[in-house]
Length: 201
DNA sequence: GGACGGTATGATCGGGTATG
DNA sequence: CATACCCGATCATACCGTCC
Image (cartoon, rainbow, N blue to C red; front, side, top):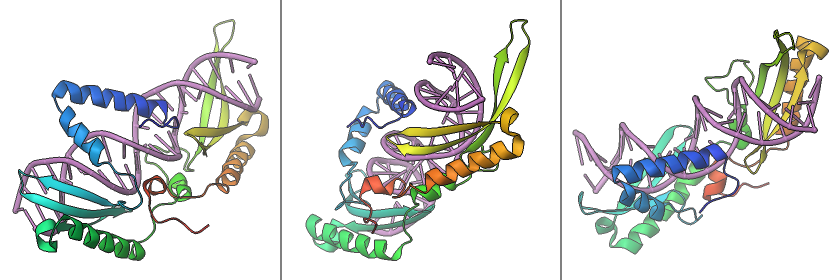
């Protein structure tokens, strides 16, 4: 399935990855991954293991919360068959979900500082726009820019000229613009697309 | 000068599988 | 058989360039 909301780079990366896999003869593994890549709410966090090679037949519950992995297997043999094992797996998954912290919210994710952040403020950057004058001289015009997600893979932007507003005011306005935009941001990062427990509100 | 678009890079989560 | 590790998928940031 191809969602039109995907960013172009993601789409390009996937194409590149698929080509690389086809070249390396790993396409069958990719098909298996696609087949098992469920997105339904009922199967959230649950995957099937059918490996002749490792004599493994059963269901597995695996959830990750803030880097912490929670995993438990439900082999068919032990639970009296495929269906019974799945029932147990779902029950365990539901119990686990009720105890675990909720997934990252989109707002949390958006305010997390990245390692490549240079401004010290997530989503707010200082950058220079370069102009070449007719005499060949290159000048730089500095801005503070705020960006924020607006859905459909799009970004909202607003830039503030340092030349016009001054360093402090341009920066403050960029921070304020982003804060205001994030007020409208709700839902969960990633898990909201995967059928995590629906949030109340 | 500001709006908008492009894309490389980073973080998180989940599935497949190697390992003990 | 249980679990840790690896990697793909997905979503977002962090700039940077171009157009109006």
